[in-house]
Amino acid sequence: MAKSMNSTPKQAAQNNVGESDSFEHSFQRLSEMAEQLEAGGLTLAEATTCFEEGMRLVQFCNQLLNDAELKITELKESYASAEDLTGFSELNEYEQDQEE
Image (cartoon, rainbow, N blue to C red):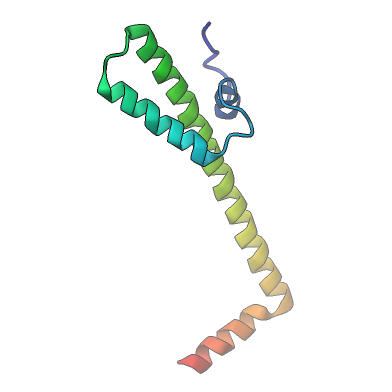
């Protein structure tokens, strides 16, 4: 049963990866699969299936990393905006000047 190549990374990853799977668990599984492929001894069908699942895990991990990066960027921007509104950035600059 072939998966559609037109799906988003998150959709493709979720075809074989549960939403509750963590980055760490998925990355560990990917590492194990890479070791299996490198060790050899798999049939062509097993290797193809393993590779296909590995690609879904890569997409899933990349999506989680992109989501985390976006969240961090948003938090940093929100924090910077809050500093500007409250005047804390000026206080931080004053404290840095005092330390020098």
